[in-house]
Length: 168
Image (tube, rainbow, N blue to C red; front, side, top):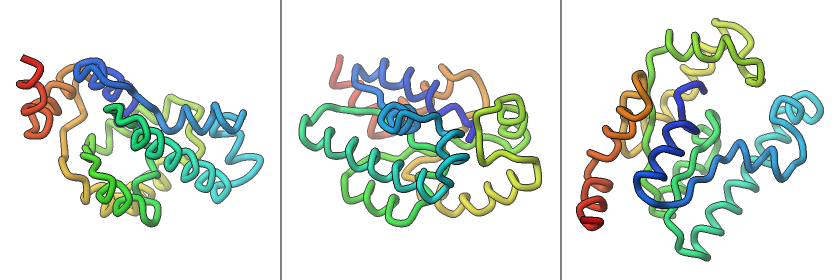
C-alpha cells in the first residue's frame, strides 16, 4: 500500500510495449463500487472474494490471448492464500516495490481511499503481517525515489534486460 504499484506499473508497461492491468481498478470497474465502499458495505472478506475472482479473470485473459501484461496487484493480494503459488505456476515474474515504512506512512496518510489504513500502529501491524509474503517475490526493488528510476531498476533485472535486448 502506497509503494507506487500503479504509477510504476503503467510506466513499466509502456517501456516494455505491453498491456497494463491494475487489479484494484478492475475490482472497482466490475463490482460497480469503489474499494472503500466494498469494505464499508460488504466487508473485507467480500472484497477479497471479488479481488480473487478478478485476479483469476485477468490471468485467464493473459493465458487466452498470450498478451504480455504488467499487472499491479492490490497491497494485500499477494498475502492472500494461494496467490504466491498461483503466480509461480503461471510463470509470472513478481517484483516487490520495497519502500521505507516512513515513506509508505507519509503517502498513505494523505489519501482517504485506503480502507485498511486507519492509523500508524495498525499500518505497521499490517505491514509486519504481509512482509513474509512480499519477501517471496522473485525480485525486490527499492521503490522510494522517482518512479522512472524505479522502472529503470526493474528493466535492469535479468528477465527484463534480456527482453529489451531482443527489441534492439
